Image (cartoon, rainbow, N blue to C red; front, top):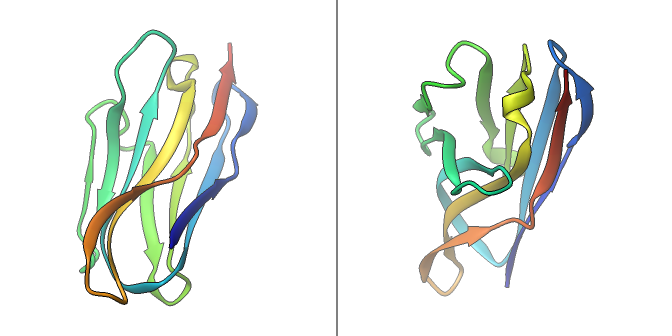
Length: 120
């Protein structure tokens, strides 16, 4: 089995910062792209940022220049540094990753989500 566990969410004032972490564990052979998504109440889940296994990154226009995704392959961990937070960043944040297990099966895995609330 493979698990993704997020941490680091919380309540912050507008203009503040938070750092989310997501650790993958279990029967992992390799991890491909890792992503952060978010879902605000009443809205569809949206892709926030992606980092490939080679370290390339991509961001939603709404977070460019404010959020930074990074990964530590040795720790099977992906991070999301969020700066200059706005009330509209309030959402449940999910990490996801394409993981090949030790049985050589590739599929997408999701974490359980962590709440980020930005007060005005």
